[in-house]
Length: 432
Image (cartoon, rainbow, N blue to C red; front, side, top):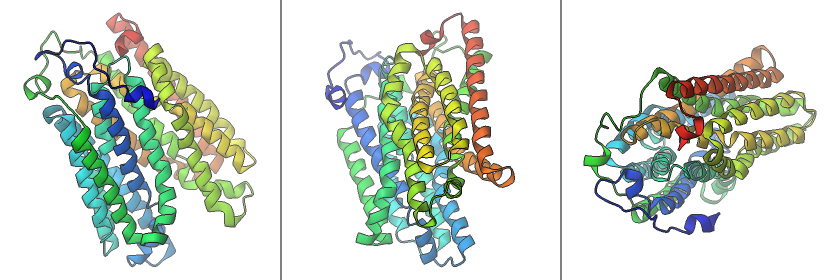
């Protein structure tokens, strides 16, 4: 795989002043993909490494009661994703107007500064505001997705986005592991300075190695009547459905996260091992996704995104059901790993299909809305799971989530069929 990325050969296309953005950047997209993976990995490591010690840091900042520590820890952690959901469309719009590389550099430098400032917080209010600011000014992974999806050839976009997702997934896995031992070496506050330094390295790599040929006169102009992609009701409904699907990916994965420790406790795991076993179970989903994201992205290139989206949703819904009947923690871990493998193709396939539905000059803004939808799912999922678990029962969380996934699969199939009938073309033709 690495050899395939590294073979950064020129594409045999005659580059002219009137060439499209993707054609002019064809010589650079593989190298830019490598930097995007590295930058996404480092930023996600830095953002997630505070998970193991966040309650301890909240306590250091003057919060004393147990319930308040839990509450403020949740608020501080979610503030970053809330901020990213708000500003992702804005940064995507600016990427359409001024280029993709400036947005990557802005995100990396901004996050490096804010991450270091978090280590200087003196109150819980400052911590929450700085975490929110990290989300507002950050979004390196979101900007990388815009760059890769608009530069990669359409017949390779699914594979490229699958490779990019490996960076974010592995960062989410390694971050909590690093956060488990770094405070013992450099202290809790020092850990944030290490995170800021790591993101600064990503910023430097982006400045030095990312190449982009962006011409505002060509790339930021409005499309002519002949170039514009028809905005029929079927097309608009398809975009809305895809944004809903992106939200469902994170919602399904996060619906059980708030209560997973309680659920494992009901499976007979000793109290002293609860935290470790819960961490293992949570990690298996991301690990499973890392194994299959590139393969499923490539499959979307071959057979069409809609088939991968519908198939992944249905398979994930099926795997969700037996999680309600497990009798041991390792059974849950195995099923969560399989679920991660089946879900891995969803986001690359959705991003590829959304990219095919919009003109180049609006790709960044539309993909920004896609990122906002994902983070909305990350917020709604834990809230939904917590409420269902409290009022109906822990096992019912799996049933409701499976039903929502099945409904989303049906919706994708129905809207895609309507879109194909309206356009008179087959689904793979829409993807290419």
